[in-house]
Image (cartoon, rainbow, N blue to C red; front, side):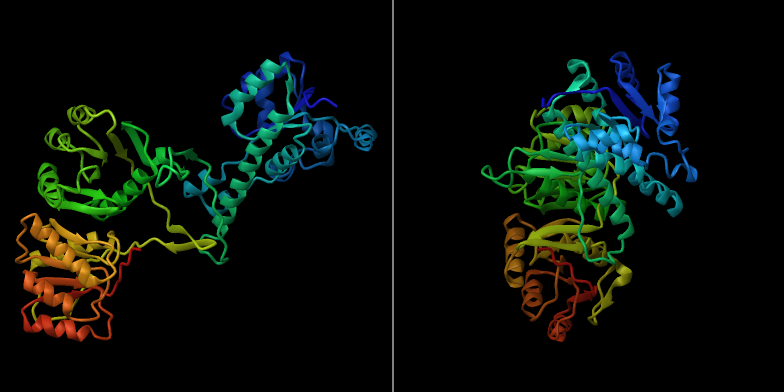
Length: 510
């Protein structure tokens, strides 16, 4: 039997009708009998095209407020019958079941209804029963049936039907079956995750409908993909395609700058997911200049992010630096023209989008999942561990340094002064190594550490770090505390005029 099938009938029952009219008109032109229900039936009639109500086939009206319309053997028999199976065909005749060659069905907008903040009852009513069943049935029987499950595919379907004069190939039908099972599985995942939003069931279900193939992964010999709605989060106005490593740096930049979202003008420069420069100032231009001063060497090829609109003066300075990506909530028109002067520079406008609460990474032969670290250290959270208390300015610097420390790879030490990152030690196997790295780096860029503050992502098991820091000029320290030997560090600070505060919250970032 030929794998090419000429359709003689179609069932259409959709929520979204945009783009449907040309398909309906083409079916009518080709003599394809159309069956439909409810609002879709009315839509087709208003086009002046003949349509057979499903009720005429099933002898049952739509009941239970529309909850049951198509759930009937005469509908599903018409879809699931095997056209090369004699017994199936005999039963179609015996029970007067029409053959259905094309099924065009989409689903109630469950995810949009949840996102809208609708009531639980409204959400429950958007759990599609008949539609999902029709899609699964038609996709299962792709050997004989073309299943169209999304309005995104309407134009392609119209082209197929037009070019084939109503006929489709087995290859086309199988491809559309894959699209349909993608729709149905994504839909079921969204419903399950709604019911399991508090993770009562220790089950991980992920479905990302938007995916793009990247040039490569972390290295050229690795494949790379991004699954997510990038366009919802950013408007890319210029530059080359983002790479796997670009996306990792952009993610780190966004998470870091979220800590300063509502603060005074703040600018950060990141490299390999860590801040190499960050400053908060009265103007964005000065914030950028002081962020760049933190490490002008590492800034080369970095990712830049601002919490305010980038103006012309700032853009002129940025333009002198080779950087991969610039991110801001907006750009002045003249600033944007300047930044576009480098054809490969990626320029992103960041939209205000809520980030996922769960964070995932592969581990061994499985996946690790944890909640996002949404805790931001604040002055009111602090415990004053030493007799010497930090000044108001030092307190502000301590919180500033703590925010950076939270988003820097462990083990880490951050040194800051006057709301400027002086240096950090990143990803070291020892906290002492991280501190020494930060001190050396700050001094190599001629920063005076006298009166600076130090932040640590975890407690000090020994007083060596506060001793080294104090000898370098650090006057205040912020750390979570919690070591059985906390008192050793506290005693050293008391004896040497160093203020220490504890947050009670560790911010490891592995």
